[in-house]
Amino acid sequence: MGKTIAILTGGGDCPGLNAVIRGVVRSATLERGWKVLGVQDGFDGLVEGPRYLELDLNAVRGILPRGGTILGTSNRGNPFQYPVRGKGGGRLVDVSRQVVENFHKIGAEALVAVGGDGTLKIASQLNDLGVPVVGVPKTIDNDLRGTDVTFGYNSAVGVVTEALDRLHTTAESHQRVMVVEVMGRDAGWIALESGMAGSADVILIPEIPFRIDSICRAIVRRKERGSKFSIVVAAEGAFPAGGDKVVQKTAEENFGVERLGGIGHFIAREIGRCLDMETRVVVLGHVQRGGSPSPFDRILGSRFGVKAVELIESSAFGSMVALRGRSVEAVKISDAVGSLNRVNPDGELIRAAESLGIMVGR
Ligand code: F6P
Image (cartoon, rainbow, N blue to C red; front, side, top):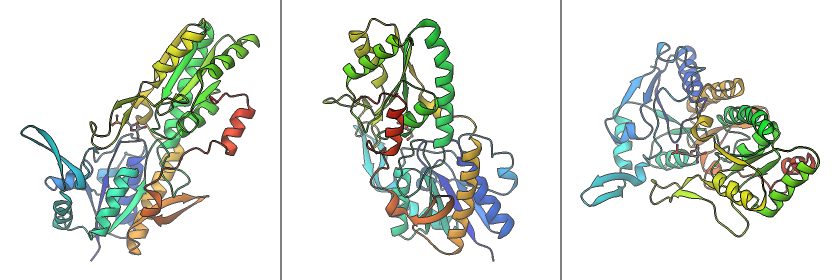
């Protein structure tokens, strides 16, 4: 008898999730004759219901180029701290037992959990409670340890780079400073790499607290050299030296995760105080998470899906697939979560950026 396995996608969506789902379904069914169940809306589908659908070859036909996730996702459904509405407001309850019961109820022998830090932490805890889990690292932020890169990141960098190319022509025509705020939470990868690819003049990341006077000096220097416009890329988690990041909602107000956003407007205001130049702010927001995955993410997501099935076959539970160099390997989920993969402020990438004349805020 073939196995029955389940897959869910948790946390914020990103391009490439469908590539993973398709990779799991195709390698499990075509090569092994297994049955695959897709749990809907992240862990919510195991808290309620259970809600799931059978994923056969027809269900995954044509989904490789599609953004988002055909299974739905949620970044509010931590079963160990599940938000429940009641009289006088909400409270957090532990419904993990219910999740374990529902997992067994659907008849699955293993669970592929596709997600970022939050989802994989939950997956690891469920593994300890007897749900055999294999993790797949996802996030546009690229802030997970254990893997050289997460899928979704390359697509997001592509979107931001294209936006920067487009903003260059309008910034130049109007001789403006364009401040472009990008996602990434507390890691500056998206800002740094898309800023380098999109020829930004200033790149501000959470790993290097910035100084407004240095930014203004860099813009003036460019002007003196004949470039009358500037592009400033700011990670949403960037903050001024001696100051704080801009938080829209605290973790307490937002299901355990801070909602960032607004630093772009702060920077534009401050630049306006020291320079007599027109400044505009562009917040790219969820555009960075939407749309079709890049070829790189389609391939990486597919390879991750195939590897996840291999790990289930060899009962390597509690592990996560990871890109190491050029090969896809297994690492322990616990080695990947807990602390973030952030940009090294003294590393080669920052040095290269500075050598190219990009100002990084110090
Ligand atoms: O982690 C991915 C991410 O897009 C972050 O870059 C961003 O801060 C956050 O999710 C936005 O979350 P939400 O979709 O809940 O607004």
